[in-house]
Length: 582
Image (cartoon, rainbow, N blue to C red; front, side, top):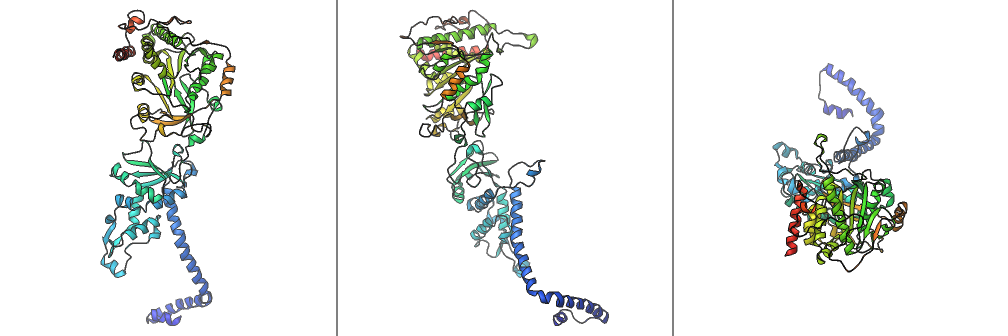
């Protein structure tokens, strides 16, 4: 040890030597007492320390990256302070960042290559850097391997390249409405366009899918273009959360309607109760799609208000199926089945509308303009429920009941402000009939049905392409326990489509509802043949039909100020009469 020290320190002055000798003597003593006897132990400890640094430092680096990648919101709750991106998501992100397509699009290697300085050449500085010091070593190694030829004799900052790429791409838990729940199999990929176009991203979707070994990669509706894009990524076939979540009468009882104008009758993809606003409503769906569910749900939730006398139901059911059980309950004032009785009932409802339009006063001193009638026992909300409404309209046209079609048009054009609403269900769609009906439909419920055209007609242009496609809902039948019955789409509060599932009420639950409201309204059996001129409706005389050339004002009983809704109704019926004449 002394010989080694002498070769390191040259001869010095006596004073320096004396001081140095004392220090050296101390070091020699420590070496002789502690180091020499424990040399192997010290070597092992140093090896362990180096190994620990090699293992622990990358763990710390990755942990910090996971903390930064957390997609949730941090707030004053301490549990959010240390929340991290889940391990499966971080692992998938590490794999995705190794994609050559994404790497060259957002962080091309040419931007991270430079010439070595003379000093770096003398020292023999590595041309690539240490991959293990990156939170994404797999991606760094992939870049080094791909760019080894280009970076020969130069320095490639592969770590910086992947760090820049990671700023543009993040992975987050997938919403349950798209099949999320298991981060290892289903997740969301968000890509910041960063000056690129959506088409450029679309061209590398195949590379993203193969890089992550996905079975499905689809844009998330409403997140395509703009500043960024979001994809739902699935390594296994997703299971629709709504398909697993069936709700029934218990849901309706746990979420009673607090107002007759908002009816909680379904859940959305987030498993949250969804209220249906009271408005003219069309339910479109093929046989077995669950059209009866929203009909019965509306009746169920309005039953309390029927008891209070502020809601009345009328029904037309040509098939004698969905509404027939309510013959045994006073929940419905009238249920009719035949053509003649349907004509009479439509005339009766139009007569109510005409009377209300005259009885809805204005009071400027109280700020009442007569545009909205408040429901009361004198003027209750009237809901005309029609099963197979398009078939009914077609039969009215076939039997030349143009006056009834005009009256139904007037009800849909003017009824909302006077608290008269039409709720119709149909399994068949017809463009010529829906043409005049569509502008007045406030709620369009689209269950499983075969036409993309009608899907987008009610949900908005391009809805099917964005993922709101009712044509791909699986059929519901007894063999699969009706697992998709009542599933469909409607426009949400923001005007965007959303997936929903209606509560299913069994025959026993409908019977129990009827038994809680026993008694009879007016159940009118069908009669034939169809009379060319309908007899007066029993409860209330029918209003005069709108014969050819007769205006709405004349049909209402005399001249009066014409509202915007009435003017619109008259224009629509005039167009309808012209089409019928052709």
